[in-house]
Image (cartoon, rainbow, N blue to C red; front, side, top):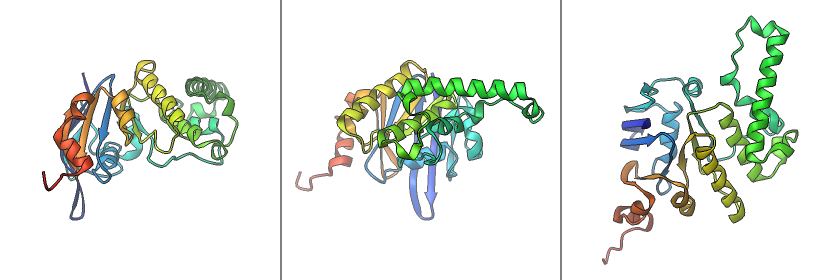
Length: 255
C-alpha cells in the first residue's frame, strides 16, 4: 500500500532546477532508497517532503493527506521525521535530553494540565519510558547521561536516529546514515535500519552513497541524476540499468 506519494515534484532555486518533475511512491513497510551522484537532488527531495523548501509545482502526500503546503514545524504531526547529512545533536545536552526533544509531538498535555503535578509527572514518566525503549533498541542505554557532544561519532548518529524515532513516525527519512562509519559500524547501522522496518514497523526512505548498504537493505531503489528520475525498481534490476551505470561511471565517448 502506498504511504508516501510524490507527483510531478519540481523544485527550483532561481534558474537552477534541483528536482525536475519527480514521481515516486514509497510503499508502507518497506525500505526505499533514493540514490544518485552528488548534486542529483536527493536531499532537496527530503527538504521538500519536510517543508524546508517549497516546490515550484507538484504534490507530496502521506496516507492521502497533502503535505505540500504544511509548515515545517507541523510536518512531524503527520508522521514524518528525519535525520541529516551532517550529524545534528545538541552537544551540551545529555543523550536522554536529546531523545526527549523528539517526543514533543506525543506529549498530550494541554495548558491547564501543565499546572497539574500528577498530569505532568505521568507525562514525564511516559516520555522517560519511551526514551529507555529507544535507547535500548539502539544500544545507547549506557550513554543516557553522557553529553551528546562527548560520545563517539557512531553513537551521535544513533542519538539523531533515536530522536527521530521518539516521535513515533510512520516514515523516517535517513540522510546518509552510513557516511563516515567504519566497516564494522556500517554493518551495525544496516542491522538497525532493518530493525526499524521489521521490529518497529516504520517505513524507511533512505539516501545513501554506500551502494553495498543500498543493495543489501532496499526493497525498492529510485535513481536520480540532474534532478530527474532515471531508474526505479528492485536493487538487482537498478544496478544493471545502463542509465544508472552511465550516471555513476560516465559515458565512454569512444564506445
